[in-house]
Each structure stands twice: as structure tokens, then as C-alpha cells.
Length: 239
Figure 1 (cartoon, rainbow, N blue to C red):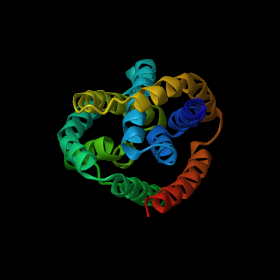
Figure 2 (figure 1 turned 45 degrees about the horizontal axis):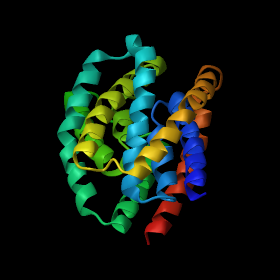
Figure 3 (figure 1 turned 90 degrees about the vertical axis):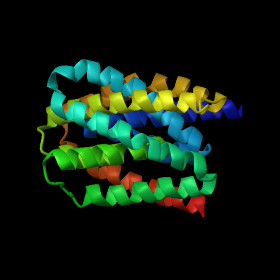
Figure 4 (figure 1 turned 120 degrees about the horizontal axis):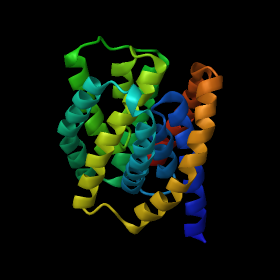
């Protein structure tokens, strides 16, 4: 019964995560990791979200690959790979409560930056720094999006979303391989992944319609508000 409830929750979480990703270009991990961390241990939440994220971003990147900025994709993906070992060390060394607080704290800080509309200066140094930070965040918290979002805000919406999906796909593929090598692919991860993937097509289809018809900024504000509440809940859980 517990597994059935967890499977149903995973389906709903990743459906909404895919919806957020389609509208904002980056919201899936910010939605999924904190919500799953309320039900399972944070390592399972991070690994499952990254694994499902690989499926989501591979599909969306394939659909929109012609719109991606190839130079930024190569640069940010490589930089992310360079930053991943730092995150893997944190994932291995932090206990459950510390990792939970880290997830909640990082989420709250990143939501604050996004809410304030912080923009980074354009250029190679910014891209490399954002890529390295995103890689470290991916393998420790599963939430690699915000540094990339801050670095790519100068792109027009369609190109921005496509570029993000390509970078996410490349980083997620390396991260999942690393998780497998470190023995993090548990039964719980497989259950969450199998059921979460089922919610992706419907979530993306709904989100894509919203992306085309509703101002993304309006939905973005709703998502950020919900993420703030989630971050506070996760921080309370880690106390």
C-alpha cells in the first residue's frame, strides 16, 4: 500500500514538474526534489529526479534541438561536468538531515535570486562559472537549473528554452552514470523513476499549451510562490 501511494505521488509530482519545465524552461527539479524529499530520503529524491529529468530533457531537446544555441550548450555542459565531482562528494559525506537542509536552503536562495530578477553579465567567464556551479548543484541537490537560467536570460524565449533542455540533457546523462557507478540506483529510485516517467507526457503537453498561450511570467510567479512554501517545509523537515 505504501509503495502504491508513493507511486501515485511520484506520478503527480513529475506531471507538475514537466508542466513547470515546459512553461519556464527550468522548473522540473525545483518542483520535484523538495516535494519528494518530504516523502523519501534526500539521496533517493535527488537521484530519482535526475533520472526522470534525463528522460524529460532528452525528449524535449530532441523536439527543439534546431532552436538551441550550440556554443552555449557545449560550454555549459562541459563546465557542468567539471563541477559534478564536488556535488558527488557532498552527496556522499552529508547525512540525511544536513542534505535536507542543504536542499531547502539552496532552493530558497535560488528562488530569491530568480524572484529579484538577478541577471549575470554576459561572457565566457559567466558561462563557465554558472556551468560549474550547476554541475555541483546537480549531483548534490538535483537542482542545477537556476545558475543556467541566470546565465542564459539574454536569449529569446524559444531559443532559451531549447538551449536549457540541451544542457540539462547532457548534464543529466553524466550525472545518472555517476550515480549508477556509486551504487545510488536503489529500488526506491527505480519505483519513483518508473512511475514519474509516466506523468511526463501529459505534464509537458499541458505546459506547452500554457507556454504558447499564457504569459510565462504569470505562471512563473505562481511556481516561485509554491517553491518558496516548499523550501520552508523542507527546511522545517531538516530541523
